[in-house]
Image (tube, rainbow, N blue to C red):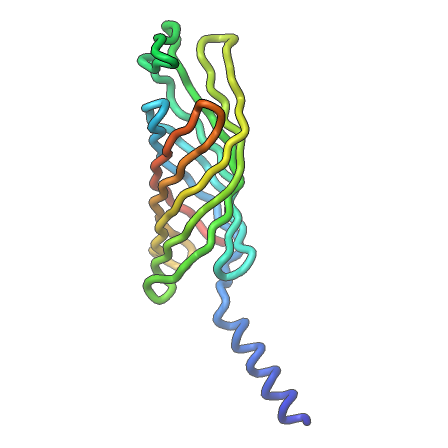
Length: 167
């Protein structure tokens, strides 16, 4: 009985040794929104719930586009700008011995489209997409991501590249 218990304990400890020791990540994104047709910058925070499940909170600000047209009408001289905040889940699939990962993503958020000084529209957003992550070092990774934001009349694809420091 003691040998069985000892064998189970060794097996359990060895499983824990193969787990990722990094549980959090902080990073930056460079983005492009296809509806607003402008670049954006973003920040993200990550929490590794398990070795393959990660939850990410991110916020992005898209620069002003003076040429943005909405329903075939040009906006005022101030143009259109946008920000959004999201919470998404990633399911990491190892494609290169724990150095390269692909992941589907899904989540929810809010987007805010601002034209002029007093005109803004905030909408609930559903995010779906996929990404690729390459671990440059144990505590540093780069990624590329494509997601589609679904909301009332403001649907758009967002393409991004980013970097994250893991601790």
